[in-house]
Length: 237
Image (cartoon, rainbow, N blue to C red; front, side, top):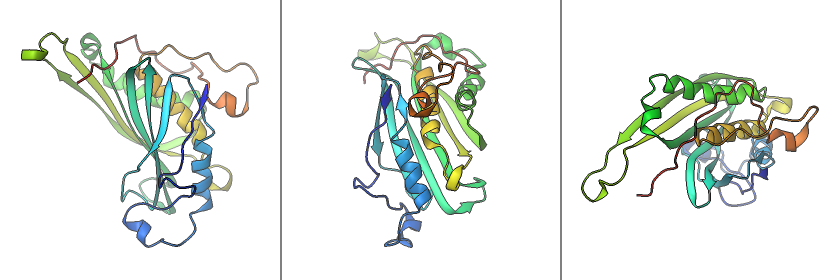
């Protein structure tokens, strides 16, 4: 397992707000709860196939935001990629029913025959909820979309096989723990489980009996997760 590494979204050793609301908080301390939540993301232990790095978070979604992007890599081939954004509004958000929100985009290329399965969107959604539940994570207000788009190639690209890309966009409210801080390391690990699953990797070994702590947080429990058949990785442009 590899630990997630990176720096804060402003490329400094501190955190600041993003978007319009950040302007009103300029010069004020970053909330301790948000700082601890971001620090915890860096302690997550992920599979060696995962490459994770911080990226610029979206603007105007919340007073404070932090984002990472990741890819599941096999040699020089990206099997799947995605982005996970942590949002924080100290005043709370009516739609979130909490002060934190996680937002994600995950995508990968599938074999055309797999994409023909009419139940695939429902199964893909179950991969997300199953990944969270397999780690015992409490969450609420989950919502999202599963989209499939097919490509057929012509002319100079006619030799390429038809391709279908699947995309999962979702958000959920993590349950806040001690000090009002959610277990963001565990949520990042669950999200990485989803990314590896949609990439077609076999499940990682289940947690050994009595395993606890940061190392255990990065391993995958197979309970409640539907396996994805092996598939080829995305083709280059």
